[in-house]
Length: 67
Image (cartoon, rainbow, N blue to C red; front, side, top):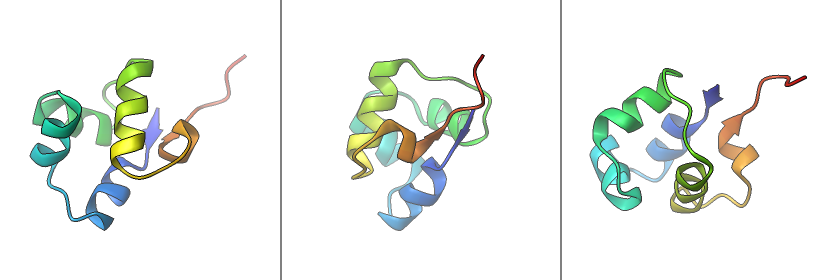
């Protein structure tokens, strides 16, 4: 799953560690999300979306076509 986490995180001048601390995960988890190596739980996706100041999860997480 693609994400726009890196883009929005940089716009807010947050490091990976700072975002990780805000949402209660490790820096490695944020790195894995930014590099499309990990799919977050719905709760984590929601927390990240809110911390990045976006309204909808779809603003941050780009869902592939699901059949």
